[in-house]
Image (cartoon, rainbow, N blue to C red; front, top):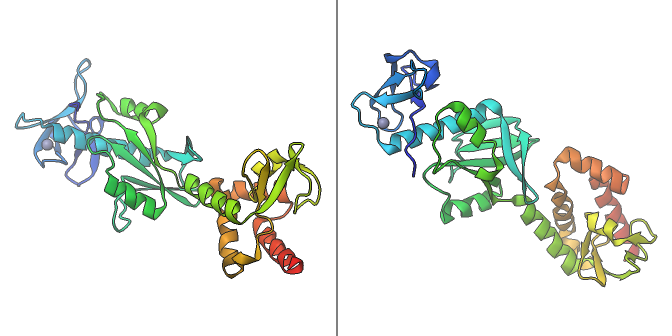
Length: 292
Ligand SMILES: [Zn+2]
């Protein structure tokens, strides 16, 4: 573990402040968030790194780690540019809302964000990595989560931390709910989907288009799933056995579309089906009643 400079402190008003935002020396009137001890600001120098030091001279490693954790969270809250998992990859998105230390009942994510209406979590690793227990809870909440690892690094300024928060090499996906949804949809299609033989790289009669379609179309279609090189499974017309929870199952299939965000999914549905997903469900339902 690395000892870092203390770059954040708590001022008299109880607000988190950066070293360059306060008067020099004792005048800063700040205390340490971790130990509550009085801090002096050392931000006059041109060569030495600007930082806070404890009045007692006793700089514990816990104090600098807590300060780094706060600084990282404040930067993300300021910038609102967050890394989130998207079908197995990390991408940066502008968040609609960023909430620090928001309680979800049994867990408190470091950073809880909303991107295009969907919740995500970002965890900052300084000392404690996410343990099994927290991971299980994250999965239960079904909220995708990225961890940014700032441990074993030394930061001399806010800019250093800012750069580390944008570096994909410091990030890993802790939980990706898109993967769960895709898996859930795949299982349904493999278990209940209509078995279609692949001929000359395609399906002879697509239940939607009623004509020959190449399998790359099926693989891209929310209703399609490849079983092996010989067969595709199509969920456009689900079997009667699913009737009691037909809508529920269909919603799982269509919801895996939220691997894209709602607006992207709408465009996708429009381009692939020529109508919206909800209408696709209704039509398939009606079609089912005619066929049975
Ligand atoms: Zn302290």
